[in-house]
Image 1 (cartoon, each protein chain N blue to C red):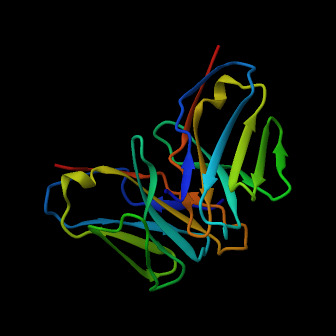
Image 2: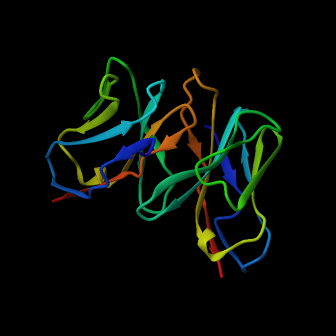
Length: 114
Length: 106
């Protein structure tokens, strides 16, 4: 089974802190994604990557950056955390388009920014 | 207009009912479509892919209407365990609808 592992299930940070959310997948997937999920808003795409060192902005990239130095790891960075970034963050990976590109999700990181 | 739109519901139905959800998309070049199920406080899990010719998996039927740019999910003979949020996903860059909340009641 594909495994997508997010480093923390729950995280509490203070306003202004730099926050790293780590995601690792073990199935050699090219594509990786970061979403945040808020009540009533569904999953919103923050950033995605189709290859190592490649990144594309999603719908809500402001306040975030990402890093993909290795194929299996996709990190989400909050340069200066703010309270409106309190949310559930979900990482996912998939094969490339045209190769049954269903998404496999990590179990999520609930981030609280105080 | 959002790229992917769903009726948020909630849909409250009795056991045994048939219920259908739609999901509209704006990018006519979209090629791959999926339905995911998400239980409370859990990550989404793939329910079924949606093929051009439509596909069925037990009580679940998924259909694609390219002309009107929507996909649908039909659940027959609803079970209590079907209670969840159902999310549609449209490629290329995997954008989700906001999800439709379904509650099946005894």
